[in-house]
Length: 586
Image (cartoon, rainbow, N blue to C red; front, top):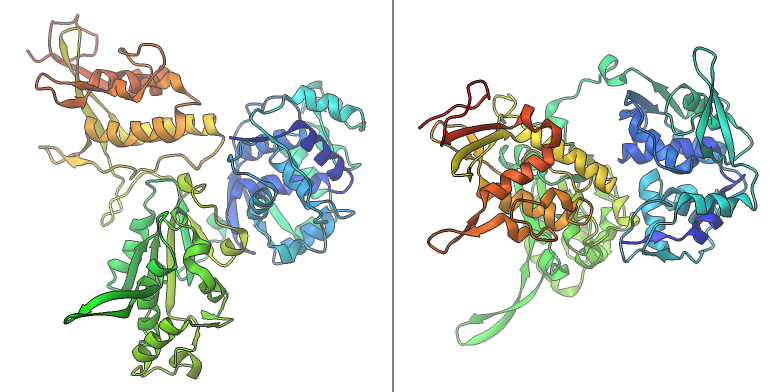
């Protein structure tokens, strides 16, 4: 992992000071937390604590405070982009300086560079290059990336030489008492109201954001949820009406299942493909392949998922779906090729056409010749390609895999994005909440024990740990991360083999091995923790899960809450004193 260097960050602040405003950075913090495409006149909710933590990074030195978390609602106007850029930005700051300051404390991928940093920034603020061109300079800067994060005191010293904007602030509370604010605080313009508890998303923050004239033309902030009072009635059949949508979220949130309910279960015509590192244009669109014709080898065009869906969509007026699973596990630029141009659509149809290569063109000419639909002549003849309005392209993306093949901003902007949040699972038919348990047995001190706990309680606890360790939601677990089995009573149980093979392995290999190694210290650990500690050989020489190690891991995760959540019962062994909460079965 990499971090932006101290020198680059200090230079970025120099470039942002008096060229951006406190309001600009305040709104950036909200956009980063919302983390989805902003639709005008649509309400979004967020937790004040999440915004406060980003404000601490943007405006203060030192560690983040532990703020209370209150739900806020924000409604963006139809002109929010233009308003933000024209009112919250001054004197054309360099776009790279702004991106550097936003990501000044974040861990970045090893292959990070200036262009990738800019792409990440544009994704965060939900603007495209055309929107921001008049307001920023684009002279590329040399950005130095290092293996370790600088300390804030070093940055404070570095900036003190050039700026008189670092000070000890005071805040007057409701009782009129003056409180000395411990952190040093930065500002970006001459308005100093942000200095009062800069990281605390509360009244001072809202007043800072609203100090811009007529800011209501850009957004409205309230402590009530617009959706609860002004809920728009949506026909469920049109709940997923986007022509091109990427459904994204943490692993196990039910993204593929959402598509299955909308497409498979409704008997829609669809083609499904899964992207992977070896996927390319030929596996997505098609290519000439050899086959035997009697004693001779001939070459024919073999269509793949895209071409099959494209042909069927032009031959019917019914909806046709092209479903791409794990879209970010493949190199989208390589896979889509010039089809990328077709993704610009107006009223469902491609705005631009592209020329078909001869092999694909000949195939399309043959297949579309008998279509009874009205088709543009050059499309029917296979000379040009154009997406029809009844062709839907839906894709899924695990946020935990988003660094596999980074999707560039130009590609992202041609899709709608639907976030699937982490929530307790519900039965597809009855809509009742599911009640999955993790259930296993272990032997300790010659006593056989039964351990059981609620799967959703574990999800919530481990996700808090992941968020704290990684400062990200990308690696969290969804409710459907692994599938249970039915026990003899018909209850849904996640057994030790599934839990260790899927959950513990994922947490060890992809998430917490470096950040929280102490979670994996179990009774058999010698020296540094290892995943090998979760397995043992049984008396037959077979490798099986070491359930005592699993018990230790679960205790490490739940910590002080373990006695409230874990139901541990001795099922064979010596009698315990009455009142210890354990049930004995000889």
